[in-house]
Image 1 (cartoon, helix red, strand yellow):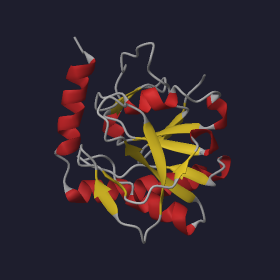
Image 2: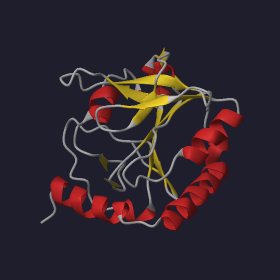
Image 3: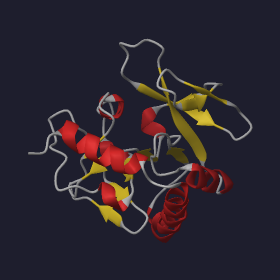
Image 4: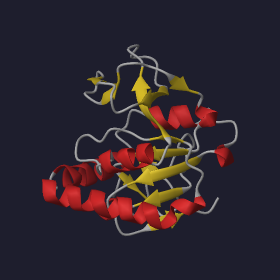
Length: 193
């Protein structure tokens, strides 16, 4: 029987064991897939994340949005271990990044944006299902943060994933926040409300 922990362990292990070539090929395909659907989305302010631990690479997407004139924001976590909310800080290529307590790069200079002003929030995942649910690393930062959005229709939540990360069910719980869509190297899934 699948549990969130067993799904996380199985898919995370597969993701972690991808070759560099497989990651780079997936990144190229992901960008091409985005270009095929981008006209459906307002993209003035974009929240992305810096890929770690085998996550599908986001560097090309970040560069693409910056060249296109979008403002890009990366998540920043508090040094306070009790604070499980993310803030999104402006990322500019000339600014350096520092590693947070989980080893994830985040902007050194913090110019934060109000969550409600972000047009698209791209979400990392360990796996996702056909209803827009996702399983992350288990700390709940994204779900806690996104639950604060007053009206989720104003922000598009799009999961980024490899194709193999799709599972039958992510075993959603009441506190889990569903995404609007998922972008993979070969597909773009729009989820029904």
